[in-house]
Image (cartoon, rainbow, N blue to C red; front, side):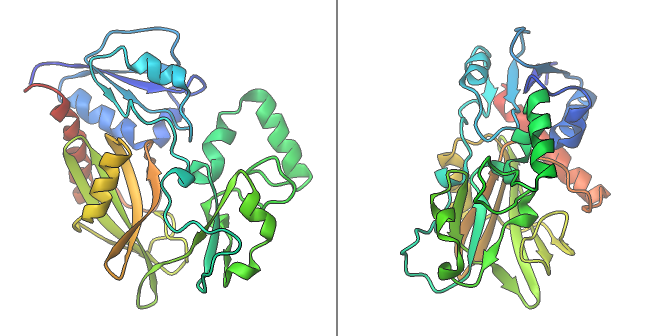
Length: 291
């Protein structure tokens, strides 16, 4: 394949240091090893020609100005994703008078407990968050009557819908959802499908904590076959690159999270097999070019 020019569009407050926390930075190294010119754009003040741009804005709602900027390029990966609030795709949402006898989980509507928005709020936002911390006020939203959620590990789980504080159902920053875990013996399970272009890999994490992530998993199974429904959801949500977290219960797939800016999990060891899977997915970018 001939040399290509590839742009990675980041948010204006990002920099060369913040990109280190994302998987895309590892892909960038692989593309460069293949002989391609890859560069980052921080914000939309300067147009630099490229054959392809990857929209990598780690916010729940991508500003329209960024999508408009990306549309100038011949190919815009994730150029159609403007909103990944959980309420836009979540299954099993609950209202206060719904008849549901199982467990219930309360989450932030924003992706990743709203952490990306707090990181990128600027100097005044940092001062505001510090004051909220001092006075022990919730960080997930400026609201005095919401659970204190700093990360996804703080999502509260209730034994019954009647136990959920009623005002949570009306909080604009929260969703209330049926908690339907995938179980195997003493483990809770989470499947994640990672993809770029025409390349997909899928794994299953197992841990003893009710909320399973790369940080809490004790066992990792791979490869596994992705569920057809989740593949279809990817098309429906216009994702070119990202990671979908889901469970399968009684044969039914339930999408839990859709992430377009994938990070690296600290306790998933970078072994040779994992690097091979990453390289396999990274090469999915080439499906957007004429070979």
